Image 1 (cartoon, rainbow, N blue to C red):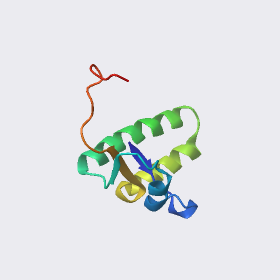
Image 2: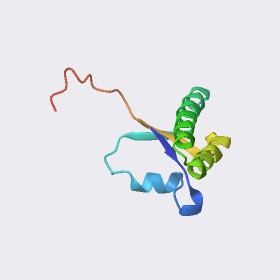
Image 3: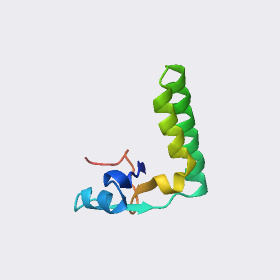
Image 4: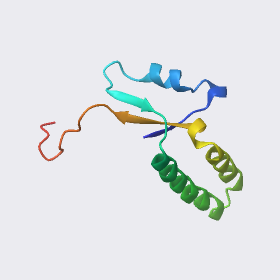
Length: 90
């Protein structure tokens, strides 16, 4: 999961950490090159949809996020191994 950071509004890495449940087994990590590529692809498609629907102001805000993705986003990933959903008992 990619989390957008907005330090001016108090949504920084420390705030995200405080908001996680005590039992949450997650790690916050910096974006890798492949994360930046994936995020750029997602946000580019989103921006295109916003522009095509006449939402140019919103598209401009999204494009601004893409200028410095490693400063604007972090990655939140589960710790440890994932259980195979085909054998999960939950």
